[in-house]
Amino acid sequence: MKLFAKLALACAVSVSALSTGAASAAEKFIVGYANMADTDVFVMARKNAFIEAAKSDPAVEVNFSDANNDASKQLDQIDNFIAQKVNAIVVVPVDYQGIVPGVEKANAAGIPVIALGIQSAGGKYTFVGSKNIDAGRLQGEFMKANLPKDAKILYLEGTPGLSHTQERKKGFGDALGRTDVKTLASLSANYDRAEGMKVTEDWIQSFSKFDGIIAANDQMALGALEALKGANRVKGVLISGVDGVPDALTAIKAGEMSQTIFQDAAGQAKAAFEVVEGIKKGEQPPAERLVPFASITKENVNQFIKK
Image (cartoon, rainbow, N blue to C red; front, side, top):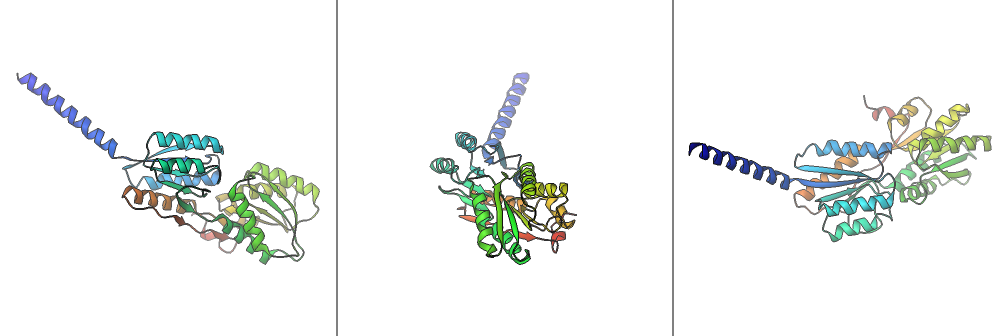
């Protein structure tokens, strides 16, 4: 009888432990994080910053997916998160228009959506990030003030058709506002360093003189820099990029790049996680949480370089 009593007690403890474990699992607040592309340097820095922010709350569990710049794949991944009945979805959209069906499906399922870095053309969501048109505006203001009279420039566009590609270019054009400045060419290098280098190599062959290269991100700007170095054409060419990645900061400090626009990966990730925490507490999420861009030049670059 004593043995039976001990076994019964052990079973009771085991069941109790299982029940507690089940309760703990049930109490987890599950977030689906649909990333645009893990291969993108800035996008990955923001994802890593979100991972760090999430460590502050053990009750939050984050499941990740990577669309690798494929809008259709990203919609499938959001469908999977909805099927898993996650508590919230953070999405870094591949495409402003293409993400709409995913946002609307999440809305229909009652799952809050946070669009991180890039907005959605439709559906209900919280936008956390920076206004891309402002990045272009800051580039335009810098070039307006620093390009010589009758300057000739080249523009490296991001991936065609994407909203941030269009907004950064528009912001630049609107702010430049100088009729004496001539754009010799404007081509896409798909936000890629190697492609930025290749396009610039072709431009070096085509144009004997130009005064500035404006790129929609730092990777293309750094590719352009490599091409100019290879042709010994760096001197006298102002180079501007967007994101504020470490290589760009190093190039600015060395006098090889003129400007980058700091997009605060850690700040955006922290703000996104704060919205997640608010949702977890039952708060109504805001329409947006803006994290402003900042222009980095040789005058202030040391403030942004991590010691």
